[in-house]
Length: 409
Image 1 (cartoon, rainbow, N blue to C red):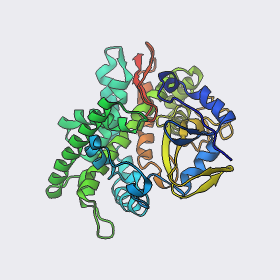
Image 2 (tube, rainbow, N blue to C red; image 1 turned 90 degrees about the horizontal axis):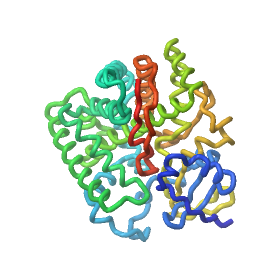
Image 3 (cartoon, one colour; image 1 turned 30 degrees about the horizontal axis):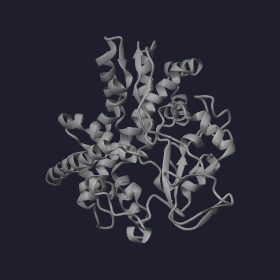
């Protein structure tokens, strides 16, 4: 059976702001399609996306089995020499056994106990951020609270000196632009520069920690070993940058999208406030997962087809790229009852937001904890919080979030 073609312009601002009706139509009428411009096969239904995540015939790369020449790929873009140096050493884009080696090292130091130990710091930082804006009566939630909270926490974990933390968000924002479908020339230049500066900076910190270790992730990663082997210099630098990027991008966007969703659903907002007032931690937890399902901050991930395979009678050839639309699967009415309805008490909620299988997000426990604490303290301190203007979205769909969210209290 031939895979049908369809043009989906995911970079249109109208689509970025509200993709759901279009995606619903695709799930009903064209659940799998080939995009001729981006040369990818898109999947929109949960029943396809979830098993494909765990299918060993798909991978984040093909370079562990074939060279660029064998694949017919062009040589690396010289404009992205420094970005590629970073990206080539990001373990989440590798496949086993290389992926397993570094993930095991990172898992040893990025433990659930360590994440739980951040609770009091998270609470203190959240209170401090609210203190800074409360007297004003209004703020832009994104720049005042959503951005600095997770950046502060992951910087604290890594051991980034406080005086340097203002550099992290701009570096990260520039680097992740390369994950969008059509970055501009300016974005390419800025991303390459940010990768170079960030790699060099982490290298300086790593060298300091080698001789004077501290209680932080950089020190632990410098000295971590698995079966007698540690991280190379570039692996160490790329891993630290990846942990920072992955550790805050989803949380920044998840918190802002989550707050916008709550403010647009008064009955569910009231339920959330009651849960916070009654210290109903179980409901707060399910509420956070429902917000992450309802409006997904990382809408799409890509995989390569590692060997010829068939799915639903459609032939996927080795070397093809597939795009898994989490944002569509998370609203699939075939899997989620009343999928377009926000239900903060939803129990059956195996959403796709953190991925599945080998590449499941290592930072999921921290992201959940940050959002649980943020929303609890936010509505405790600012119970009359409300919108004071229109929310605006960033350009870019692959990492989807708000540019601004004006609120009053």
